[in-house]
Image (cartoon, rainbow, N blue to C red; front, side, top):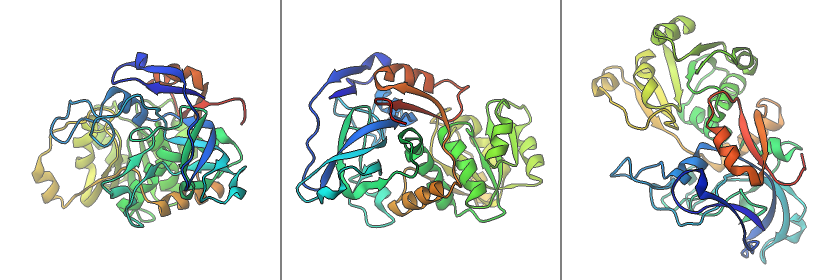
Length: 352
C-alpha cells in the first residue's frame, strides 16, 4: 500500500512516501480502507520530537514522552470503510463506514485516557497517513456524517475540546474564555461550549479576520490576543471575571489566563503551541483558589457523546483545506500557517 512515514525526528524532509505491505488484522481487529485523515499538531510534534521528556523539556520524544520507533506512519483522525475482519470479528461488519477511536489502553471505563499503557495511533502504533490501517473492532464507531472528509475532521481536536469542557465541569451560563479559537481544538471548543454546555464564550484569536465566523459558531465576543490591554479587554467583554479558561497556547497567555479567572476559577490546558515552559507565581494559584487541569484525549463515553452531538448538528465540521495523501509534506507545512481556519485533511482517492 501507499503510506507516508516519518523516518526519524526532524523537518518535513523526514516525511517520505513509501510502498509497504497492507497490515493484516489480528483476531479482534478489522482492516480499514482509509479515505480521509485529518492533520493534527500531534503529527507534527511527533515528527519533530517536540514533546520532551519528564526530565528534559527539550529532549526529542513522542507523545508518551518516550522515544518513537521509526519508521512510523502518523495520523490519528481516520475515517474509512471496513474491508476485512479478523478471526474473532463478525464478517458482517465488512462495508461499514467508520471513524476510529484513536488509542488503545487497558484503563477501565472513564479512566481509559489515564492508563499507563496507552497506545496512541501515530505515536506508538501506525496511523492514518496510509491507504489502510488495522484497528480493534471495538474501537470503531459509525461515521457521524455521510462524508469521509467531514467525519475525519472531528476525531482528536473535537474530542480534546469535549474532554476539556467535561473535565472543567462547565455549567450553563458560565463565562468561558477559549484561546487559539481559530485552531482545531479551539474552534470546536467554541461550538461545544456554546451549543452543548450553554456557556457564554469569549474567543481569543491572533486577529479578528474570522470574527463573524466565530460569532456564527457561538462565540459571544472575539478578541485579538495581540492587544496590549488584553486582560482588561477580556474582563470588559465578559462584564466581570472568567469562570473557566480553555487554553491551547501555553506560555504567551498563561499569566493573562490566571489574571482574568475569578476566585475558584478553572484553567484547563491541552496544548502549548505558543510555548511549553512558563513562569508561575504559585501564590496566584492558592490565593485565588484556582484549579489547573491537564487535559489530553478523553474517554470512550465522551467520544460517543461527541459523535451524537455531531449527528444532531450541534457541532459543525470546520475544514480549511484538503490535500491528497502524497502531498503530506505540503499539508503539514500549510497546517502551521496562522491564517488558516479549521482542519487540514489528507484524502485518499476522491470519495467525499
